[in-house]
Image 1 (tube, rainbow, N blue to C red):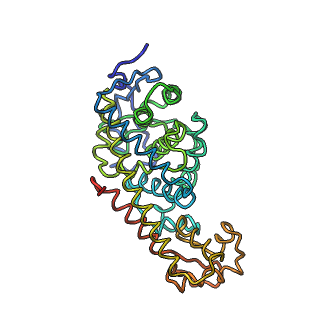
Image 2: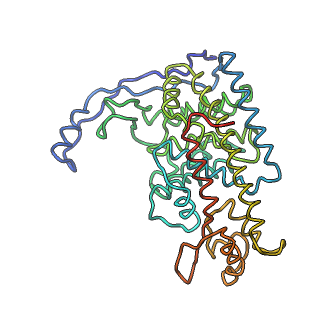
Image 3: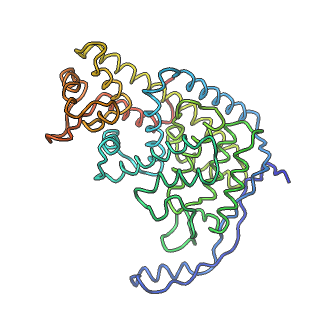
Length: 402
């Protein structure tokens, strides 16, 4: 049966939370855990495979405008895609992580990715999110259960390998206490409902009769409602957004940093998810339209800043136009922290020859060395890192200059 506008509303079922055993609890924790024992209500996700998405005319118009802006931005980069594709993907990963209160500077993230440093937990987690985004784009041709599990595995493998790439087998909830779901802001569906609900979601996502941005927004909200993993649901759900944008060919070359747009007002984002669960998908569609417009504005400014930086470098670098020094400079735009090892991996420059191509960039003030080791030396491009931090700062604003 075709569902109506209220077809996204969740139902609820009464379940029992067991009385805990005493082992492993302090006396205070045991008392708190025992207060959780008893009946609680878990969500039953709506069936949306055949959902007829009726939206107000102004919501559809806003979604259509946002879709055109996304497609135009994707097309604008054209032949310049190589320098900016990875930068925008990393920016989307960092913004998606920030929504989950995982923050790190552009420098910390770049060092964690380029050098494999693990001393800064948040930076390492954001690098994991970048891998999930890459997996999402790579798997966009076939969005199915295996693709979603692969995204989650790429995200969570470094921090939680036991649950990475596996559907949850326990009850989860949002808000409330640590000992049980009673009093939580939202209790996700019982774990036995996860796989049937995911199959239903995928059937909806694979339809070709719904405008792309509304379809992506509804699929994302449904994913967050199902909450199919013990951790990493928000980041995986936003990676799924990028996979669907590519799958539907709204984006073909780049990752539009939609999460950076959502970050401008996270309260209204979470409120829109709540409205969706009450049966109104219009709010989350509107939120995605707004976020897409903000993402394009912010993304354009980032790309413009990086173009200006690279042009300025050309006037400051003393090297022949065919020198590999310029290839290193190009690499720095998309990877602002490099080491002798990464130069060999990315450009085929042997570690013994790295100084030959790096020293002119140091002399021009393009990069600075931040290691004092004789081996595996590393350098960073401060101007690029500043541009990335400026992008992140703009992402937190509700309005951006056009």
